[in-house]
Length: 278
Image (cartoon, rainbow, N blue to C red; front, top):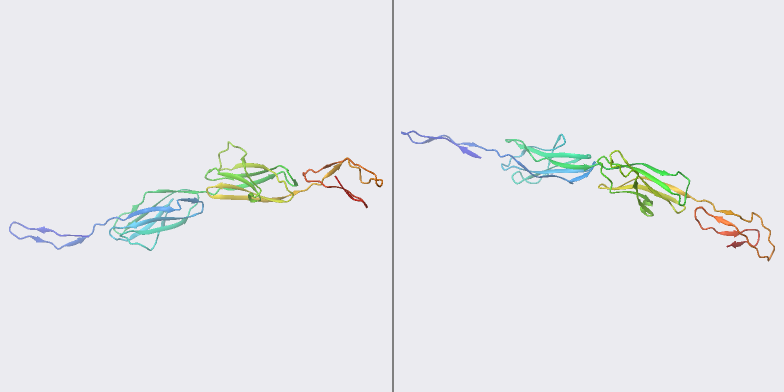
């Protein structure tokens, strides 16, 4: 604050002064330590925009706003500090995927609007996994080669760090998938992947697909199948009924086949003298 008055005299009189009049020269506020936390994130994540309002005259703000895209948002005082040394404000907002320009603006009752330098916030879109496939269809047997397929799509055109197919959540198999078209670098409209795998036990198997992305591990396409058993077959066997003389040495030649590779146990069966067969 300041005061002023006027002084006058002529050659024949003493100096005279007017009454003192106070006046104030306003100083605009400043905005410091402006930014956002976290500095980047995923589509839909909450972000906290913040700045500190300082006014050398101790004047409160007429308004405190955060501007992003084409919209102003009224900021909230944190409730600590003072205008002379700095008063913190924030505004929390969930932001969609994309590149966003933001800045802060304010004014006091006696000054003009003050804005910060615009900054950029990058928000990544979470990729999408779709079109899950498996061929051939049931029935599936031990060591049947299976072709698992899926499509990876990212609106930001970000390549995946890794594409995986997992058997029983990776406890048995954790295989990297291959691009069907390695020259395709457009992830916006979807890129197709495949992997060849098989199961070697007769049981229910579960699998899923996943991608390692800056958003973390993203999975989808969970499914399961039962690996079926096939009965063994005997070729060149002696038939269903054979007569043998007591205490007579005998020998049969035959072939046994199991398409699943299972161990086959042989035995001679009858009403009496059932014996294991080697």
